[in-house]
Length: 138
Image 1 (cartoon, rainbow, N blue to C red):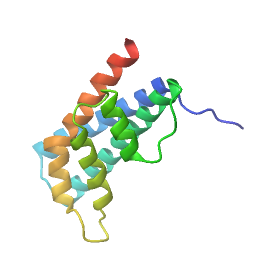
Image 2: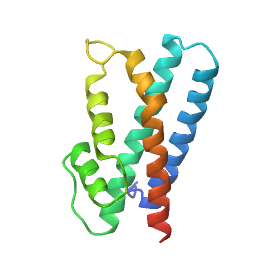
Image 3: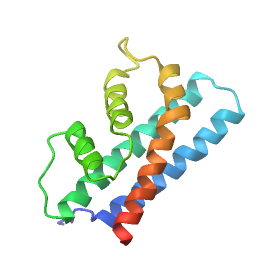
Image 4: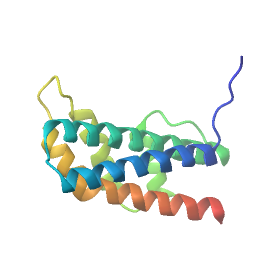
């Protein structure tokens, strides 16, 4: 059975669902214990939401007939140039932090990444959601 690639609107719906799950987990995280298990859940949901955002960006540009991106950094730079995101450095930091975070090898500490998600990255993802919705409606 042949499956079709998701369109931009479906990618946005998937991203919005992942973002809501992340926001729910962040609410619980901030109102309960900030233990390792809670941090891992926040990080997993953040990685999913970020991945869905990048997929939405890719589909947005594909819909416009623009080329394929070789990686998340290229997509991030192009999204900044197109004003889909308003903090290019913050988004590149997200990409780098995801690369550096590895629970097996030393790199970015789990607690550090969870704090960045709480204090910075969630706002970047929410801003992207607002901007992409405006672009698709306009």
